[in-house]
Length: 443
Image (cartoon, rainbow, N blue to C red; front, side, top):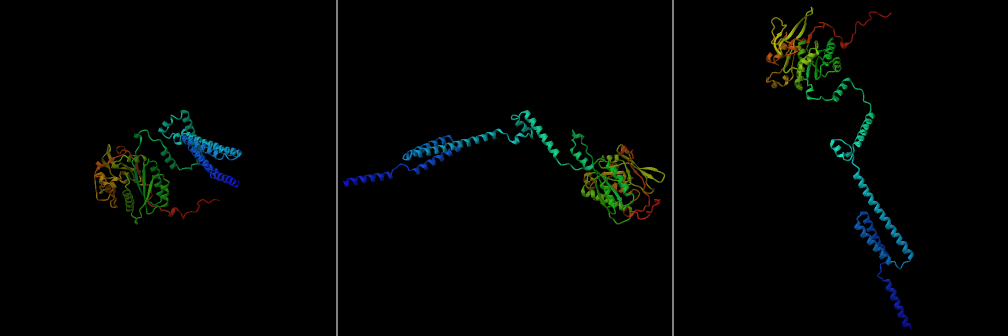
């Protein structure tokens, strides 16, 4: 009996021990397999691959089924709750994956349908042609109207423009002026280089202002070179700045009282300035005491090499006028009006106010096939027109290289008047220190 009970006890212990080594999967292993299956399902949903999603669903269902058999020993209530939780999580993940997939497709479709900003704005003809298939005529017209309205608002909101001087206004109008229709309408003018020698004296301001008004009426380009002796005075600088003419203010500080040497120094400084900067134009020595017509400067632009014209000179106190300059047949010089002293003969009897020449003769003699080693400058020696004649001999060989201007040398455009008194005291600094008493006092 005891042996039978011992055998029974041994059999029960063997059964209990066998149950401990049951090969069925444990709950922890089942949970790990479910987690791996759900993770694969979420990955497939995120990638939107149908094959991968189907395989992931099959593996998840197999895992859940195996988990169901493995946990058959649990209570029915806990089993139902776990299955509901798993299915709820699965449903939520599936809906989230679908929402993400449709969101990416929707954004891609919008990016394809909405044109870029560069394609919308018709900057050139090609862009308008590309957009003609996408936008109708009404859309383009409305877009242009909106663009013009925006530009007008921008212009209205801009800060006020400061006032400009008259010269600046003329310059701005010239820049914004419409170009001529044909190239033949473009007027090309030769530059004029007007050289004036002046000195500090009582009538200096009067002469410079009178000449400045004449030059201001000459169409540009024109350069006024003013050579002053013995220093650059403040009055001359103010006259030049207010003249409205492009100018250069030079100085001759030679220590001498000889008027002829002073004039030679001033004109040679202007010649050296033209050579140094290689100024291209028609050079004329305009005496500040002469009266000029504006039309004469337009005649100078016709000069190719050397041009000359007659000058009217006022002589004596009886208002007698004589001519000095060339006689012409057409534009060819055939003779001269001369006012020479006895015993003095000049090759070319004409003064500085009666001729002009091309500036390239001074710094490019090879252009005129006349290379020379001698510098073309003025010399102080010579009276009665010899100084001018010797200077002209360096510019031309004979009358065949000259051009007669002013309607075949018949019009007088320069007048020489001697109006300055021989002796006049110049007040220092334009100030009067004496004779300031009132002649008629107020009583």
